[in-house]
Length: 180
Ligand SMILES: CC(C)(COP(=O)(O)OP(=O)(O)OC[C@H]1O[C@@H](n2cnc3c(N)ncnc32)[C@H](O)[C@@H]1OP(=O)(O)O)[C@@H](O)C(=O)NCCC(=O)NCCS
Image (cartoon, rainbow, N blue to C red):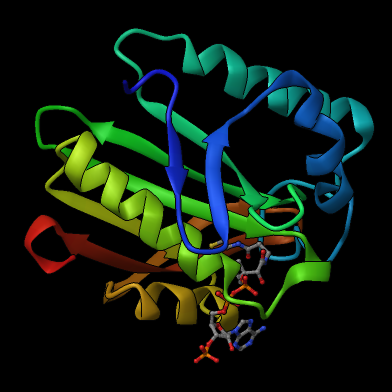
């Protein structure tokens, strides 16, 4: 059940990654605005293909700790973005989430719906206790998504990530299994 999952929301499904998804992923991963707050990108085609292959390889691991889902529109089957959940600590039942939406679909509520679905998967199927997320303090859209799905801001992680132009702080958010 955990190996080949499909999660259904109102307007989107989250489905397991396939090799030929690389083009839909590259459509956003090659854009500067999509990777602005990320240590990677904008991607070349080769970089996106390597990224997809790594996620496919990690899906085969046992125990599996990385759950990468493509966000697909129910209405038109379009690849809207991706969301992932990583089990960071099996003993302490802890995980983290991240998401990205194609800029042409920003502001339509898709990140919020995808984050809600993946949190439910983490708590109900993977039996996690705590799920956290980080974002740039300047990434107002991502911070809003995390607040909307009920996560609490715990503080600021100083010099958390090495970006293309130097160190970056991250805001740290979390949610516990009894808070969903
Ligand atoms: C952050 C991101 C995922 C948001 O996706 P989205 O599908 O547009 O988000 P939603 O439509 O679900 O919006 C959720 C809320 O955030 C708000 N929001 C979205 N973008 C915003 C922005 N740039 N500035 C301020 N608020 C913003 C929306 O208005 C909405 O709040 P509201 O319901 O109170 O109006 C998207 O901009 C993205 O993919 N960015 C690049 C990748 C990234 O930064 N990922 C997060 C890494 S931590």
